[in-house]
Length: 309
Image 1: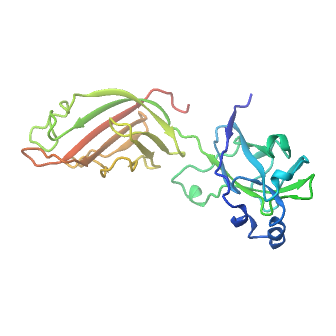
Image 2: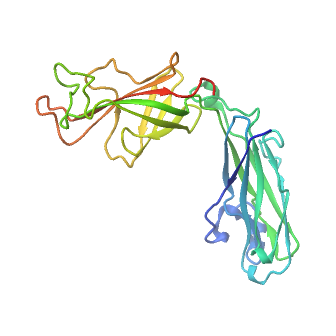
Image 3: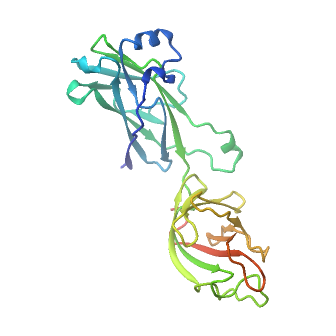
């Protein structure tokens, strides 16, 4: 049985639909739209995103009638959606339109939902960091929107464009046991800047906890930074090196590595599937002897899940 996931796309409504890009491509439609009402999506460009693991994702996208005389309408409006020839997405193998027609009624304020399923089986894109990935272009579904039932209501002249963002399965995502060594220059414990440094005497002792790495792309994962709740992103590159960024909510610049030991390089070990992180930042107070302001972190992530999950 296929794994089907449901997603509702909710967008900010147009403030003034007559000023939107919606009307730039069809002058006749522009003139009609000045006096007629329009059936449209809240946003004419959107992204349908799903992990390409064989799952199917059902998206529900709001549609509505807007215009100068919506309050005066009484008839039901039948809206029809058709894929344009300019689409690069393939029907059935990449997507399915579940509601080729939708009826909008006065009792529901001429509001409805367009339903489309993103099909990921057989659509895994190239992995990050490969030449194929650099050349890859996500398929696009361009839709025409037509309306019938009342001469004062027309379909969107520009239609809508949906980009199908298939995300490759991420082998690094999952739950990890984490061992943390946090070396602080003034808060206690040994520090890497001193002679006779003891790696087993970090500030606060050796810390053990669990973290979940959540897939963002095929190689990039999101988790929390150090011992705080700020977000950070770990990318395991094709050569097993690590890229590491911290959210702007953390105000200090974070750098990879240990300033006092160049051999400690962040990396993914494909044999053990462990992730080794070495990073640091400079704080306010400095070590009273060495003058080092660096807060230095060693984190080792051990996966709790089997390879190829």
